[in-house]
Length: 287
Image 1: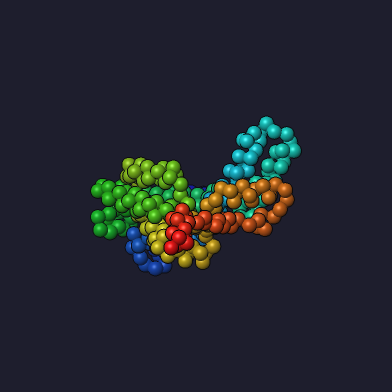
Image 2 (image 1 turned 120 degrees about the horizontal axis):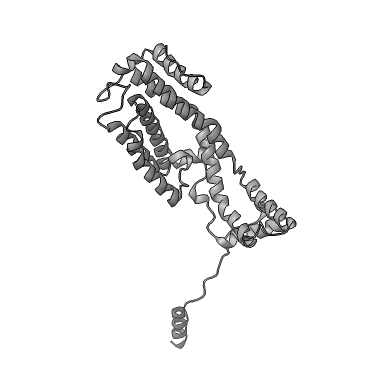
């Protein structure tokens, strides 16, 4: 009997893995892989929600920055009326793009963090207390209760994570990952190798399988753009390209015009006749 402690999310993860092992009759490495894939499938709607919110925030960011520019960055020192007006304009931008700027944080803290920590501690407990883990592995990681002495699992897990980052699909930020964040994630993929090398192979196998799912998910969004559109996830093509249009919208919002009624089509300019055209016409007239 494995003692998973008294934390409910750790118990749920641990007994879930054991149920897969006992019900399907899979070896431990298969049970861990199936559990990881099942977990990612169950939390896929959460990832889609985060990607929607992140994409909308990226699209709305230039509008919010324009509001900040118009107020000269002096919101804290302005009058109460000016601060109220500033918040109203920002709220109109959020309302237009259906944004909740804090929802991604609360979803991460309320769903993804408990799930991740639950499986981490449950697998560590299984590796420590279940004798079958010593022979439940495969290939070069036959012993799931100890670290991978070849370091292949941490290296492969890191490589899988880095590939996902390069596909712009890390942690719900597909297509929206800024250069600074992306470089930070690249660094994390390198630090991940020594940081996880001492984990039991059972835990690393879970990380590897989860990252494999993330890579497949990223490739789907990258090479099948219609999938993102079907799920309502904005793409970089939706980002405003004209600063003048952004200023036009925010100024209209400041006088009470609904943002969706403001036209942001670029103005059409008539091309002036070239000098060559004039000279050729004159030559024709002389002839």
